[in-house]
Amino acid sequence: MLFSGNTLPFEILIFITLFVACKWAFRKSWLNQILLIGGNILILCHITTPKSLFLLSLLALLTYGAGWLLSRRKAGWLLSVSLILLLLLFSIRNYPLVQSWLGSWWTDMLDKHFLSVEKIGLSYILFRIIHWLVESYKGTLRTRNFLTYLNYLFFFPTFMAGPIDTLNNFHYWMNTTHVRFNARMLLAGVGRIFFGAVKTLLIIPWIKPYAVDYSILLPHFGPWGAVLVAAVLYSLYIYIDFSGYCDMAIGMAYMMGVRTPENFDNPYFATNISDFWKRWHITFSTFLKIYVFKPVISLLNRFPIAKYRMVVSVMAYMVTFLVCGLWHGSTLNFVLWGLWHGLGLSVYKLFTYGKPVRPVTIPRKTAGVLFTFVFVTIGWVFFNYPVDKLLIMFKLLF
Image (cartoon, rainbow, N blue to C red; front, top):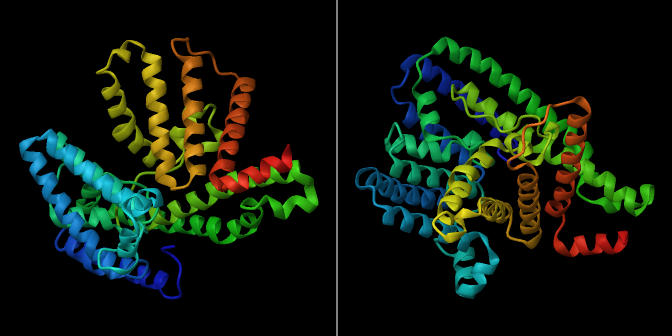
C-alpha cells in the first residue's frame, strides 16, 4: 500500500506541502520537474524498485514516440501494432498460462534478470498508455509534453489503484492558476484523506477476517449462515476498503491542486446491474466502455450478425467482462466473476430492450436495489475464493 511504512506518510505530507508552496509561488513554472523528481520518483521508489521505474520509463518513452507519430500520420496499422505489443507484454508479465507457453527461460528472466518489472501499478499504467495511444490517434489530446505524460503515468496518489484520470483533465489541473480555488481544494483534500483513513484503518480491520473466510463463522452460524454472512460482509469490505483508498488518493491529489475523477457513487443503491456499473469503479467501467465495449461493437457490426442487434450487444458484454475478469486476476475464479456480470448485463438488456421506461415507485426501486445487491454479492463470492475453495464450499452447502 502507498500509505504503509513508518516514514512514507510523513514524506508524502512534506512533499505535498512543498509542492503546494511551489505552485503558489511559481504557478506553472517547474511544476512538472518538481512533481516528477521530488514526488513521483522518490515516493514510488518506496513501494517499487528503481529498476522497475526505470524500465517503465523506457516503455513510456517508446509509447510517447508512438503517440507522437500517431498524432501526425493517423496510421491505423501503427496503433494496432502498438496496442498488440503492449497487451502481449502485459500478458507475458502477468499470466502464468502465457508464461508456461514460453517455457521456463521466461520465468527465470522475470525473477532474476534485468528485464524484471514488478506488478505494482502495472495495470493502471497500461490503461493510461492505451488512453494516450488511442487519443493521440484520434487527435483529442490538448498537450504532448513529455514531462506531463510521465507525471500522468506515474502520478503517485493514483499509481496503485486509480482513479483512472484522462490526460486532458490531468494537464488542466496541473496548469490551472486559480490559487484561491486550490486553497479550497486543499481543505477538501484533508477531509477526504480523513474519511478514507477511517474506512481503511478503523472499519476494515473489524470486517476483513470474517469477510474473506467463511470458515471462521461456521461454529456460530452453520454452513448456509456462515456463507451468507461472509458474502454480505465481503460486499461491504471490498467497497469500504477500495473506496477508502480512493478517498485518500483523491484527497492527496486535491491537496496538490489536481482534481481527479470520482470512482464511486453509492453503488449498492443501484436499482439494476447496468446502474451498478455506472456507480462502481466509475473510471474503470468508463475505460471498458470506451476502449473495449464500443470497439467490439464496431468490429461485430462489420459481420452479417450486425442485423441482430441484441446478439451483437450480448457478445460485446461477454467479451468486455471477460476482459474485466482477466484484468483483475489470472485465475479462473476472476473469469467466472467477469462472465457472471457479463451474463447479468446481457439478461438485463434482453428484458429492457425496446420497452418503455416504467414509472419509478418506492416498492419497485426497493426491489431493484435488493435484487441488484444480491446479484453483485453472489458475484463477489466468485471474486473472493479460488475455484478449489468454491468447490469445497458448494460441497459443504449441497
